[in-house]
Image (cartoon, rainbow, N blue to C red; front, side, top):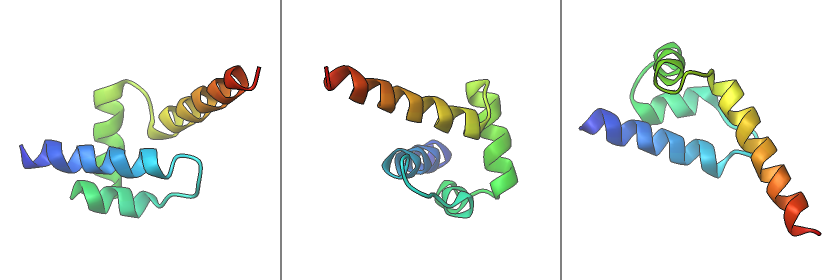
Length: 70
């Protein structure tokens, strides 16, 4: 259960720093695993790489901003 909580905290960190620079080492530290382990686990759980997730989230936010500016 602690592992899930740690991973949720790491995802909250990523979401909070989505449009800014973020530190992969910090994300792994929050998740209480090594950076490589976090990347593998993230990919296994989501079916996409962490960078692909961030890219998609940033595009979603940009699309929402464009939609709201109409």
